Picture 1: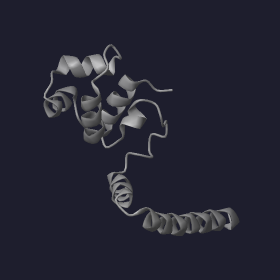
Picture 2: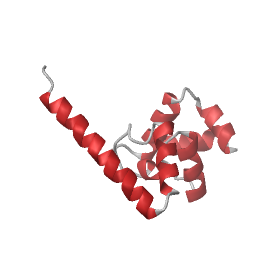
Picture 3: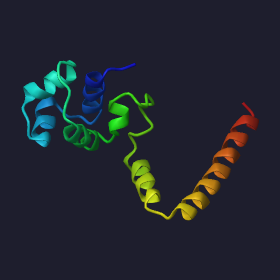
Length: 115
């Protein structure tokens, strides 16, 4: 499992940011970012939320609840999930049924594709 600090460092670099840029966005110092990345210090919950937003991920990923590094990096996918969350439960269910059918069809096509 990748540590919290390594995830911050990796995501920051993926965004093309240096520690100073991330520190400025968080209104903190480079030394604080450095301590996070070396796993010497953990941020408050509010700072972790802001870090997740700035790095286009989730607090769950940063804290190790989900180790799929690509799953929450796509801002368009995250926005869609946030939008769906606002729908009434019965509408969410319709979306999930449709999405499940599309995913099943895609997997079937992939499984039977000529290689």
